[in-house]
Image (tube, rainbow, N blue to C red; front, side):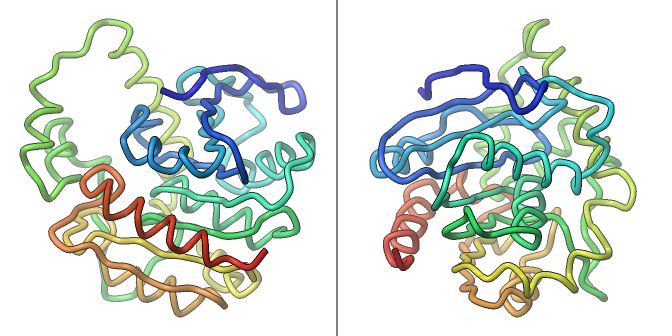
Length: 259
């Protein structure tokens, strides 16, 4: 498990987890909140210092009224990088977190060494409609996130206690705050992706029911230095469903990033 702590970014208290040594890898979670210290993170922390915050509004972090959208989150995390003096950071995000990471990268990559996006939100592709998690019932949402229904059934079979229910509700409100309108994308992001001039790795599951796997090619083609990996028999969370394969691919990519 990563070491949990609180740090201040300006006057905002941010809950983070940290584990490992070496170059920093900042992981930005999806709309469901941080998924727990998965085997995926353990594998990465053996070679990098993995830092995983709760976004403002999620879990242990403050929810300041002035952080209203993903653009605000991007600038907030740039304040974190600058205020902490972190340079050469490997930036990684899943879903909502991938969108935030992309918004950071189009604004300023001076402290970013690489970009890894796992099934990111943030753009729309004409003719490829996305799913709508806000319309899915709670059990339907879990089943739709995974290709491997054994994972979904395992998660659904574990009842939440009162504290976990409160946390899930807080995370759901925060997810809606950032993704409700327009649904999970910024109409201005796509035209600025050429500014994210760092090595990028796009990872997608071929059976993603939230954002179609064909979105991966759109991201690859719009980023100036990107590669795409599509995982077979995999849904919206490849790092959860295929932790060994995804961590291996991520580490291979990161090792090849120029110093």
